[in-house]
Amino acid sequence: MPVRTRSIFGPATLVPAIGESFRKLNPITLAGNPVIFVTEVGALTSTFLLFTVHGAELAFQIQVALWLWVIVLSANFAEAMAEARGKAQTKALRAAQSRIFAKRLKSDGTLETVPAFDLRKGDIVLVSGGDLIPGDGEVIEGAATVDESAITGESAPVIREAGTERSGVSSGTRVLTDQIKIEIRANPGASFVDRLIFLAEHAKRQKTPNEIALTILLSDLTLVFLIAVMSLKAFVTASSLDIATPVLIALLVSLIPTTLGGLLSAIRIAGIDRLAQKNVLATSGRAVEAAGDVDVLLLDKTGTVTIGNRQATDFLPAPGLTKQQLADVAQLASIADETPEGRSVVILAKKFGIRARNLGEMSNVAFVPFTAQTRISGVDIDGVSYRKGAADAIRSFHGGKIPD
Image (cartoon, rainbow, N blue to C red):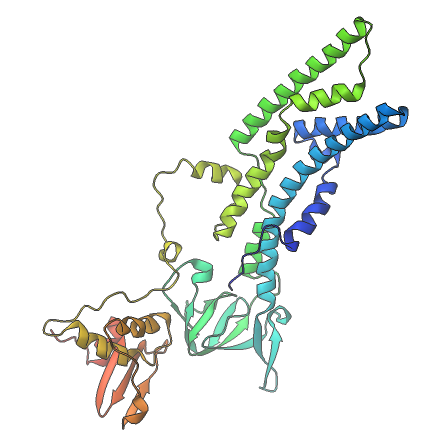
């Protein structure tokens, strides 16, 4: 289920972020960010004081109040944009799921095409080669080669067969060959992919140790400057001078680190969502921060660091044969193989100057397609058999032994 990357300033993220910026003005929400909380208190105070002044002083205080609200809203907008990017990705994933259709088997034996989200537990669906599996379920008839790299990261296709311990399938995976009947075992919203999306949407974005320490430092600085400004007011009053309260508020906001305080949470959220763009699900900012100190990373899934499918990269001929000869017969044996590995063999053969030939002009040609049961593909031409497949399957085809 490929998901197209969206611009960070697209309507899918920009419009919700603007609305969220105003919802975050709730003082209870801002209490977790002392710097911006103090700025909002100053903005509210300046706004209320507008009703007590007039004349030239009013214009100045309007500017002060406006700039204070701009600072608060900008901080909220930065955080909302970071959150909206992650939400837009999960929405795109859900939208991609909604575009999956299934061939449901009706009680009279006929098939009907329905959206995947209309399937219910107990429904029987028919899935053919090239189709996406519409829901979590159990194979009840047939066997097929399934590409599960989108879910597990494993590049090698797996065999899913009825009546065995390998009969379970997941929504979003793709059947490569053959045809199977699947009994749906999960209602909409309860599949593996749905649970994964739910986990991404409801991951608790906890503060990292460094962020907690920085928040404490910013809070201390804010408190120091707040005391300094209040002391300044006392000194001015004692000197029989007068200074407007909005001026003191503007001075306080200029002194406290509003930029760093406003972007702190946005930086944390952006780090998690940036990983999500690379298909890495991080449920903790602490883990993202710790990853910066990693020198060596061990991965146990081949598909995690590859392109997702195994591909042929070279031909290794037996003694007495050339690569050109091996490439020629390997291409013939792979023409009827629709798996990614089979197609990659045909592509690799082209590097040796071997192009697709017109087998229709030859007599007595019989293709042997790759299936999950035989695990062999090939072609019979004029009584000569060319086969390619799993080592044990080829051994059985050759009478139980491999020639030296």
